Amino acid sequence: MNPQNTTIRNTVPSSVSDIVLLAKRLEIDELKHLQSRAHLVGVISHMVHALQAERGASSIYIASDGKRFEETRLKLVGESESVQRLLRDLILEESCASASSNARIVALLAWVLLGLDALSDLRARITSLRLSGSESVAAFSRIIAGLIALIFEVADASVDPDISRLLVSLFNLVEGKEFAGQERAVGALHFGAGRCDGPLKERLLYLIDAQARSFEVFLQFADASLHRKWAVMENEDYTAELLRLRELLRAAPPGAVLDPALSDPWFACCSNRITAIWSIQRDLVEALQQHCATLIAKAEEALLDSEGLLRSLREAQPPRADAVDRFFDPHLAVEQSLSFAAAAPESSQRPRSLIELLQAQSRHLADMEAELTSAKRALAERKVIERAKGVIMVRFGLSEDEAYTRMRKASMDRNMRLVDMAEFLLAKAIPF
Image (cartoon, rainbow, N blue to C red; front, side, top):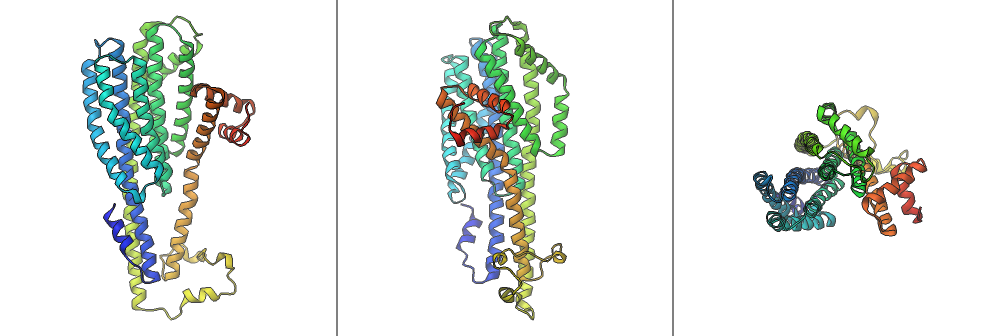
């Protein structure tokens, strides 16, 4: 547990002033825990990237019966193991901070550790060629899915709107990048086999659409600098080449012959795009960590200001006990008694009394709550869509791709947003 947090909880406040300061210290404590989680999320996103690269090299190693990419794969394994050790230490630290965690995050930490423990056996099976390419991809993808789910839960548990927006943006970027990695693998299987496979094509179309949804939300919450980097990536030659090859696959009917020579250009343009997304991801993680530090510095400055104000009030008591008089004000509605709405002329000034300090803190918390609701709307909508998709999968015995395609078609047929269609299905619980 955070030593500062222990100190705060063991301090017995003896006055209103003490409680006001306790609230501010608790806010700083929450921000510092968010900062540690931001660091955890940064390492998770790095682990995802490392495993994606290892997954790609392992697929080629298996497909070539161990003749290609052996040296590259071993180098990537070493990089993954380095990040893995750091991530394991951070997960154990987070699991010890149970007072500031929730059950879902702790449960996911256990799943992620289980996945990390399985990596050594997975690598041994790949080295000895005891797995098929599809089995290897599926195993890596399951571990990656757990890591991405942990980013989602950390974003959903964030109590600061600015940090929440950054986490929502990062989650969707990492998720979209994972869909892009899977697209690279599926397209390589198409071109490598020299033939269009119907189920694989359906999977490819799902991954392209899923990427677009994730990246749309990422851009919704990203700042101007990341928008500019994204625009540069979208105008690169490798993006144009990817779009051309995508259209070729879209147009190919199941069973159609494909040119195997296109497998290398496909892999290259997909890889260049993923590398560019990784660069944007690193910038976003850095922005997240810097913002945490800035918020903590501001909160600590506000605490010092409040301590100074309260100290001066104790030394020179005001002539009127305005805090007491507030409860005898006939013009103040009872339902507004705890709203602490400050008068307009005072709203831009530093607090000058205990009441004004409470007013400012109340406004700050109310503003944060409103902004937090807005920031987390995208996460809430995703939860609804995933729940509805799961219901469809179980009810009709469909794959994830098929369930999503059916739900998306239904939303288009009814001219509804996808999330509205999902809510309709969950509320009505009827087949369609």
